Image (cartoon, rainbow, N blue to C red; front, top):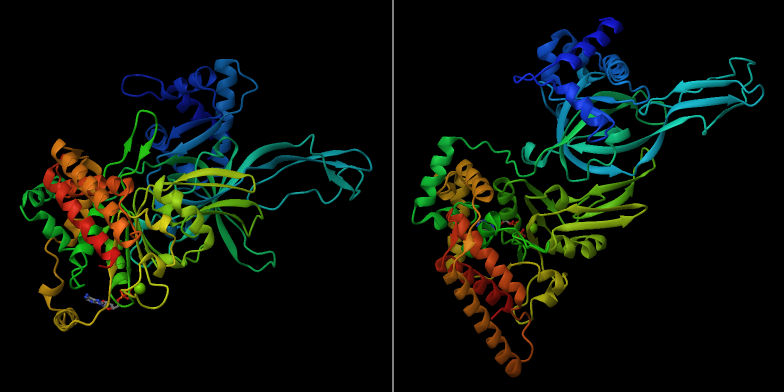
Length: 597
Ligand code: ADP
Ligand code: MG
């Protein structure tokens, strides 16, 4: 297609494309950005263009560089002819392409084409000026030469003066024009990967008014042109993909990836009506692991979660219940976490000694390629609104250790380093496992002393379960029988009461749609228990010295969350006295274990 034809195609499209009511969408958008909301770009729906001028829409995907420039020319002409605006430059930005790719699907066939990719942003660089139009001055004769630069390739510089042939050239910063540039890294969303797959990533460039529109942890759909650049300085024939972004859009984190059909919803509602629904769900968590009923129940409560609330003054009350499993080696802690990683919505399984620079929280690190500072999201940010399963929690880095308190309580992570300041969301439920400091637990000693975790951090967990490996003939025999059955593939040993796919959808459905409210009876129940426990702690103090973990207002909040989660597990909009009692029972169980009496 000729350039003139493209420009005319766009002029006609922008001037006349109208919706079903006859509103000229793009004329109105241009009017808006001249008056109401000054902006530097206009977003064009690819499907509109395709409906109006299919060859041009196809050409845009095959030959984006020229077509986007033609669209820009068309906008300049319309601004000048229809609006008498000579100065303004507007970027055309295209969205809603017919296909959305995953990062791992990007291949050689996409190079230099306009594509649409979906993923999660893991790191974002600082904003830097990019010299879009560079003016070189000859220091011998004063001749000026202009070169247009591309953000993804090396600086273009005239080899010698076009006038006198001198090599003595210098970039004139005053005369050159600059544009904001930022890079980010896009990675496949954890839930789009099958267990154990390594996520792929692609680096991307944002220019001009697109900088600072996204943060690490954001889920986005980006359209852009896939470029390749030489990977290393050693001129090996290896290239790296880079996405030159044209349009970027956040995807809401509330939207569940799981499709829940009306039939699914009916099955979910039927399951919720069963009188034994709680037991059925708890019994379906890690069925290959024998016993640990309370642990499974605690984890189930965390998976459903309490209700997030914002007070009128802006204070946020978290709904997420965090759960910690501590115990001797070989008691199936890791196995349970792995199982739950497949069940929970938006789950990420990781180890405390995670290999990424950002670790569990977030970090400012230097990008190897560009040398600029980047803000990189850790697991708790990437699993925002989901669940992080953290094994070997006690092995986390010192940096994580200091940042994780905020992450677990305020559900955000603030970072301020090297000119980067940001607060990232981490509304994440943490289910973690830790081993004792000295090999095995000693029942005679208080638990906190035997863990390489500070008590302040332990207090962020609503439930802490202690799993001891103590020989007991009956239990040992049961576990042995169970493990052998699982090994032999005996169906009843591993078949969950609720089919796995249904349970997954059930959890997602409940988290999204059910927001239970405490009944008066439930509040009374919780209050009574709290006051009783406080009194008991006081008595205990005077007689046997300080108890390792007296109940505090934190546990009161924990009880509220757990009661809400219990109601949610039944898909109930009301937290009943029964829900509160169940929450109290499981907390009692956990507290007793921690006290080791
Ligand atoms: P941990 O992380 O607590 O050190 P693992 O999760 O690695 O322990 O478990 C060790 C092995 O023992 C796993 O293969 C696990 O399946 C098995 N195992 C331990 N306890 C049980 C149990 N109660 N039921 C079934 N298997 C068990
Ligand atoms: Mg383990």
